[in-house]
Image (cartoon, rainbow, N blue to C red; front, side, top):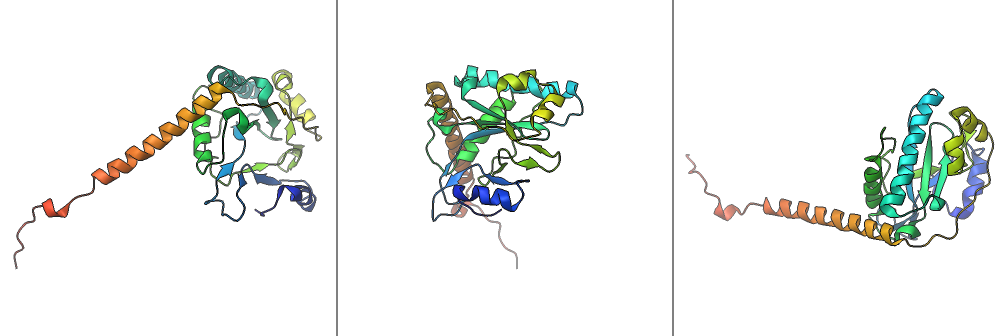
Length: 231
């Protein structure tokens, strides 16, 4: 991975013929390492499932629709605020603006995101959300770049098209780059904000309890009775 600024993305695309090019999900503080820095970036989901035909593909779409419903019911996030991308191979990326959750830069953002992903995945039938991708250096394929495994592009796509396209139709759709339309009207949603805060507090409490248990296991050797040593 090459450390670059957002302004250098196009040069990287050109250098690698716009094929299998990635960037980090998160932004980092200047003059700090990735491990030391606070993180800020969109909430993301990677829906990943092996399928060979349209019947199997529809199982993935079923779970995607469940996720969209759960985001509305549990977080009050309408689908108009959700950005969808076909990855060019066997799944979808879902991206949400951090503003919706009222998120501020923090070191454990990836951990909080993982908890949301696990919660959403528990609602699905086929468990299509990859919950192992929430490290603090996560790379995501660039939009409108080529997936070398399929020759197709990672492309933005509407929820309506996802629901109506067959697998053959979505592959045809991903055979060329598509215009990126970004919803610029994102605002903090109270229910999403409160849910995110609940997750933060729960994780912090779990860590405190874990540290307390470790402390409680510390033995005061002055109180330990030792057997006599026979020489």
